[in-house]
Image: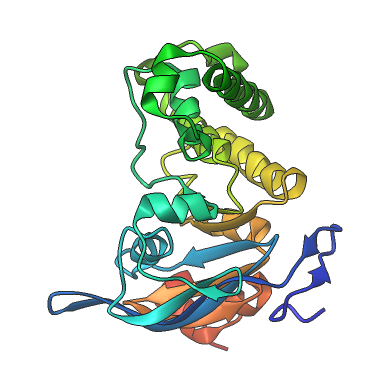
Length: 272
């Protein structure tokens, strides 16, 4: 198996397709500070792609470029075989890209169900007036979206909290609700920004299982940032490593683990 080219089958039988997204020579600057310097990498359809590196490496900035929150000064973003023009985040979401955030971004006063329903906004075609009347096509659309959301809630095993305001939930469940909201958008590419941050061992095991299930059962391509190297090496098909805005490694978990520059910069110095 050539892990650096698409269209192969993993050891556990998952199908990895061709290139879904390409980041070509991305450079992002904030004033005189260069957050990302001439980085290129790709994401294959159906894979779990990890982006790792020490704090300040530019990982979240890269995720913000992918999701349209930041626009690079140099380089190109290609998605599904086409160069992507400068787009607002809502337009990127309509293309089929959804994300979670490093700091949980939910509506604390709303129930779990209502929070997850907000993930369906990109699929709602009826106008505000029609939705307010809740009649005919608008009513049918609402029912269809709610049915889909209930399936996501069942899939992530949060039925028992569906009517509880998010602000009353413990941290680990909030992270799962945020994942549910992202999945409600039916993304082709799901971006996860530190999905395990702040979790205990049991919560990490649950989240890891759900990430694998999302990839396997929905066929969703996943790109994630994560500091827990055990999680990264267990979940990922390929890993790209950043350090001070540069790419210093790219390959399978085993290839990255044995890359001396990566070891020195991030995993811990270990010379032969």
